[in-house]
Amino acid sequence: MECIEDMFPVVDSTRHDRDYPAIIHRKRDRCELNGTASLSREERRRRRRATAKYRTAHATRERVRVEAFNVAFSELRKLLPTLPPDKKLSKIEILKLAICYIAYLNHVLDV
Image 1 (cartoon, rainbow, N blue to C red):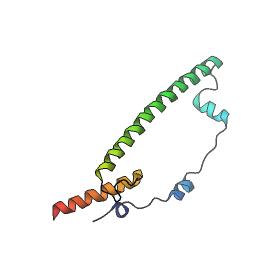
Image 2 (cartoon, rainbow, N blue to C red):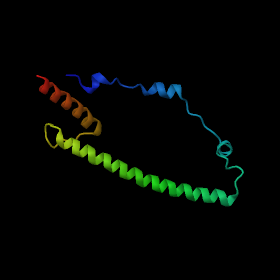
Image 3 (cartoon, one colour):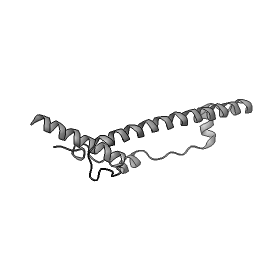
Image 4 (cartoon, one colour):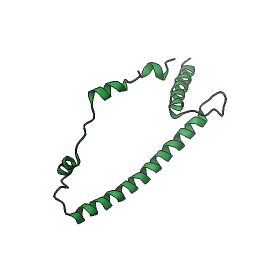
């Protein structure tokens, strides 16, 4: 029976850091790129308020999304056998155990 560790190799995060170095821009450069350098003071203020409203709405949507994921992980966890039964598993442990358990059940059905 093949488990998750055999199917997915570990990703080397140092390669990403080496291939994509951080680039720092000055504030003036960002304003020119965004097109905000020529905006009036009032227009910049209006945009900041709209951005704040967007951030608040986005944060609310993100909280709902994360809560839905947590509920789904909790439901999946209830269906998986572990010893001891009340052992707290991380999300990655739940996914790995689910994959191995499904593979085991497929093996049992094939025999």
